[in-house]
Image (cartoon, rainbow, N blue to C red; front, top):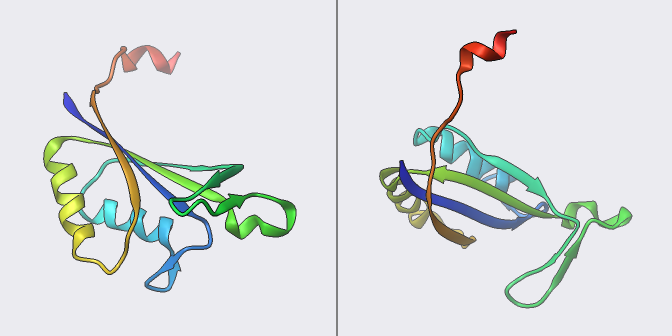
Length: 110
């Protein structure tokens, strides 16, 4: 299938509607029918304004977070339409990809 790899870049301490922004984004994705996501915690980053973010011992809440979704074109349009109605600003990247599954699941039961 053809689609996109969407990556959203956040900080762990960002909140929206009473919860961490990354958790809220995962809930939105489930609500609109996305089938999966991956959340990665980073060690260090800097944002659009050049402000550093890191996972130092005393600053764990400032840890960088990246959320990845693999979506088809319709899912991408639905996600961005939903997010554009919210009072948030989230930096993202979008890469065109081909995706699917390979293998014989029946062989995994051995």
